Length: 173
Image (cartoon, rainbow, N blue to C red; front, side):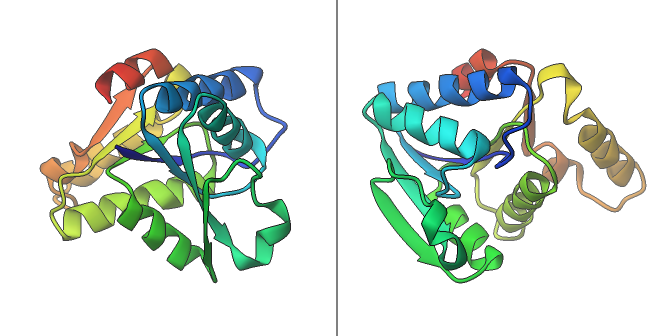
């Protein structure tokens, strides 16, 4: 299974975020899956890629051409893209399932893009969010409000799954 992982490129975040990224990466590699991710040796992307490769998994990095100097050395395959729109589309095309770890607006953008694409084209790809300490609860509340106002179909909101721990997320995978 090709697992797209969206996550932060920042380094000044909680140690638990890095622990979760490494845990998921090891799980991906040990279970014979392939990581599809943003391709860079930065933040949580670095942690999940290194752990996947160390555990024997394939690592597909979707690397912006403007960031070639930051591409991860453990990438089995580098797919070069010219912009963020192409990066998101390429990750969506190569993924069987989507996972979001801790991340900011870039991660939210990727999750929303995957949700919009999967819903518009009615593709059955799952979207799983690591919701440790309720990180994504405001998003869940926003979706509930959009559904209540008739601005979002309930079945679209239900495509996003929330898991309070990386272990529960892995079991769901």
